[in-house]
Length: 217
Ligand SMILES: Cc1cc2nc3c(=O)[nH]c(=O)nc-3n(C[C@H](O)[C@H](O)[C@H](O)COP(=O)(O)OP(=O)(O)OC[C@H]3O[C@@H](n4cnc5c(N)ncnc54)[C@H](O)[C@@H]3O)c2cc1C
Image (cartoon, rainbow, N blue to C red; front, top):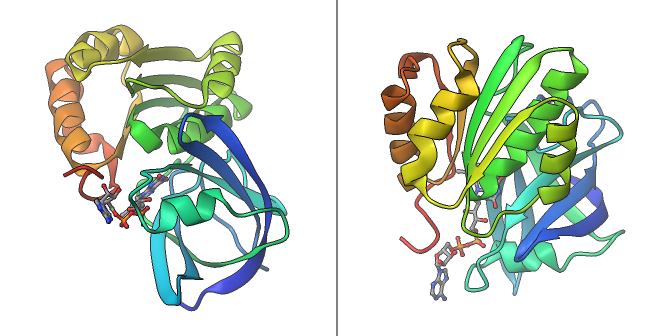
């Protein structure tokens, strides 16, 4: 799938070394929170592409992805320094682990996985559903959107250690059977899937997106 060049609308800090990147939607572009796009650009004379997951609840004239930036990485630092009006290539959407109008959602997120988590939770509430986020991060991002979600009735647990995952998931589900989603780097997915199982959730039903090897792996 060829990349469509689109303008950057805004780049906003959403925490330390983390930005929300809002882009103009390509013509005819439609996607759901949890799907991902391929962004591409020329960085220091080399063509670079990476995948980023949609973190806005809806696609309108614009859509958003959320990035955490490793300063030693190639594309993250480049994207975080873009400005309104710059151009970036977009291809997609891709992926099949996305929100499909489930009435109850549970999103377990690690690191930048909180991007699709807030997008899916916001969309679930807009659709009059019930939602819970269990988010693991030593240095959480998107705190404003997580607080707003909590005020609107979402169950939100932010924990600094994955050891706390099983009990947080158990409390978040509270005997219900929401659709589970898991987003994050590969090492997190393993831990999160084990935690879902330990909390009594049927892990075969989980919609899972792997962001690849952890940045410091
Ligand atoms: C399906 C999918 C969805 C994804 N969704 C998201 C998302 O929503 N948000 C998000 O933030 N990421 C997401 N990712 C990850 C993203 O695509 C990139 O892998 C990530 O941003 C790192 O890219 P980079 O070019 O900055 O780092 P890379 O240059 O690819 O480097 C990766 C890591 O290698 C190490 N490294 C690289 N160069 C050096 C060096 N010179 N010295 C020492 N160490 C080095 C660093 O630790 C670096 O972080 C997703 C990935 C996939 C596959």
